[in-house]
Image 1: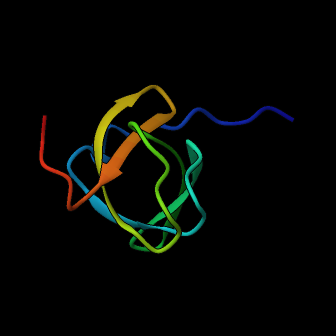
Image 2: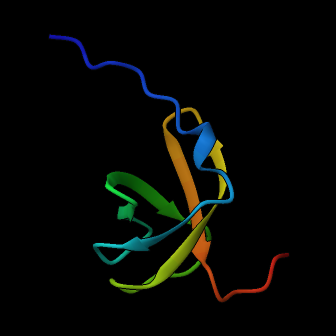
Length: 70
């Protein structure tokens, strides 16, 4: 059985909430969608509002939504 390739490009700029602690990877919910994500920088606690900053294939890079853009 082969895993289907997914495209998360549409998530760039989308806000979501972490469902696990990101150390640096974990899971986050965007609407009804649960996605594996990677924190851009430091640890992000469970339940934190996040925003998708970049997508590289199936790697979704996020940061806390209250952080200022670099």
